[in-house]
Image (spheres, rainbow, N blue to C red):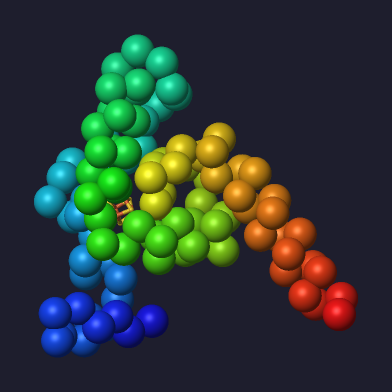
Length: 95
Ligand code: SF4
């Protein structure tokens, strides 16, 4: 997907990822408590500033990313979003 950004055509949404300058481990916490809770808070703060948050979340939902923070959501938070997406996709294919 091409994205028009400040008069430049960016070839991939990842080129605009706000997390690109951060330690990737911060976006893949082990669990949700203790130090992992701090990692999740940090990752979500970065995602909140990201120009491609929607594209990132869509990618994670469509490719069923099982772990990590994508589009500002943890795997647990993405699960109901993916269920709705699958349900909607089934409904579209059935009609
Ligand atoms: S939404 Fe978060 S994880 Fe996705 S590209 Fe942006 S900063 Fe990275």
